[in-house]
Image (cartoon, rainbow, N blue to C red; front, side, top):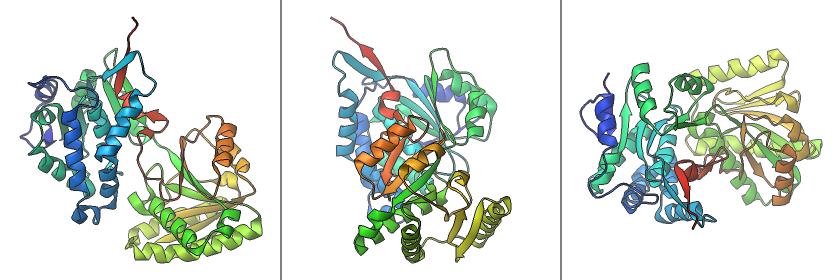
Length: 410
């Protein structure tokens, strides 16, 4: 039973050795919530990610770098303490993370928030990770050279092959287990028991969709329209539309004839923007998209399928109720028209996570959320922000989840 440490890089180790080292108190004291040693490390790491040679190659790492800037970290810690007079937030202890392989930077957000909360952390990195994830690991190790020794003592990222014995050992030792991934992954990992006072924080399969106000589109200037399409392209094509917050359906909200005209204008812009960004869909993915989309037609839920090269696939749904929540391949957009946001309320399911929107007022969106009444939708963001990570995710305030609150009465 051996694990390969990736951060800090080291020789292979056993679970017992790993747990003994990561839970040893640093020589100059335990980490605390908002610990300066962690802040300094995250800020230095952020600067590295924002270097042009990294941010240009991996835009998602540029977004991560912005999330970990000094000001953003300070705001997260301040928000934690808002309204908490008469209490103190303390670390949970040892946090064990199981991030997904298909969104290869999500583990850094989860780990960073937990480290900022003062926890010791073990992150299992998939042995299928590549690209941006490898750059993250390299950058973390490079940043470690000038970091306080407490970081190397309390933070670990490791890789190991699928091994129930290792997973069980680590699970039984942790105070909080964070599971990202498909429903099957969550169920499989939950087979391994936790200590009685430990708990799980799970982020299973989710799906997301988009809505566009047709009247707002008609009133928008050409520059605003192009910006909206560019934002939508980011939401769809980063992570090959496999992220839980990437929209898989686009609802046109308005009068049908006007919606048709707006859609034609919108979709005329999209292929050029995708090509200009250098996003490509290879032949194998294109074949998969053809199979999936024409399969919808065979099932009677799609009235038309249209391709613009390999990159863009459009599906006309027979009815809004036929909204697709499964992944159909990168760059697949299912279209439907509804008269109002209220028409989407009966469609919402608990699995629905993010609504990306264009052109609706805050009051319209607030009314929609009230009508949905908690059945689904954890976040509503403008086009272009679907994949922007925030401290509140899937309805959880992560920094609070990574801490315990001790109340003080005098």
